[in-house]
Image (cartoon, rainbow, N blue to C red; front, side, top):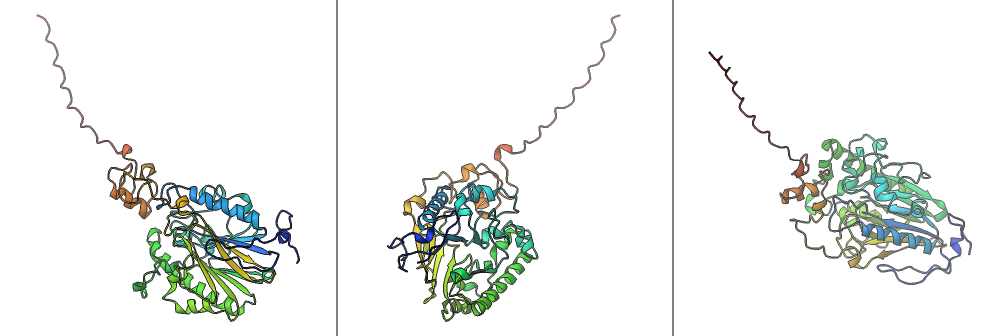
Length: 398
């Protein structure tokens, strides 16, 4: 078997594969040697001030630590696929946004960030990003076309493809945020990108989301026809069950006449293969368990894709015991799912923060809009005292 050298100089191809079964999938045997690997993560950018029932950033950190362990154990990881919702609650606004450092670089080890992170936008990523209102990708804070610039994600356009002839693989990333409410079958004729209401340009944002979705479907159809790769990894922010109104898309994902397809989507905060619409004989995963917002299922973690020396693509999940990320929250003095409210900084104006402030009139912040600390309530002006009448002059002593 030939050996490939990984970044750093060691012979990753020479490691004997570990046989066995992952928690939710099987690592199928391709011989005595392993070739290349891909890690997949989604919905991970935990925020101290605004989050769901993941009570701390510890879950995201544990996922990152286990990714690093898996990378070192298995060898030649070529890239990481990130299906979005990278920065809760409202995305980044520029490349200078401190969230790049606080929620990504400070959480995931340098070794993980030394490989490209192939990424797409999630719905939360759009909310305050200028991308929502922009005329093209140049306005988008996460777009980066330089694959060697690993200080940021690799995202040359909002929908794009990347060929890997050495792996007999093509990767296709799709912006399908119009389908954020695709789970709701009653909205078939009225689907729109609901998160546009949090942008400063709702109508422009809705038009952008519609146009970008159509561009994404067209790109996937084109690459399905033109690509000569044996395998395709296709990903967007949403799992297959969000596209029941697009049977043409689902049918193409099922078509293995030209490629074996692995489809990856997040948004729902768990890791599984059972809650999605199957695309057999091809394969798909829900990969929204990055520990950034909430636990919609018992599995948080990530997915591993392995490409054997025969270019056979297999995948399996690495997950955590439920209690490590999804333990029942401690009793909270606050109404609703607002356990974080005691640390409210009054700065976020996302729906979760505003709802919690409204539900808890005794909380530390006033209601939206323009919330501020209750301790900073303006003091009512005190009515001035009436003027003191002048003292009459003392008459002279006769």
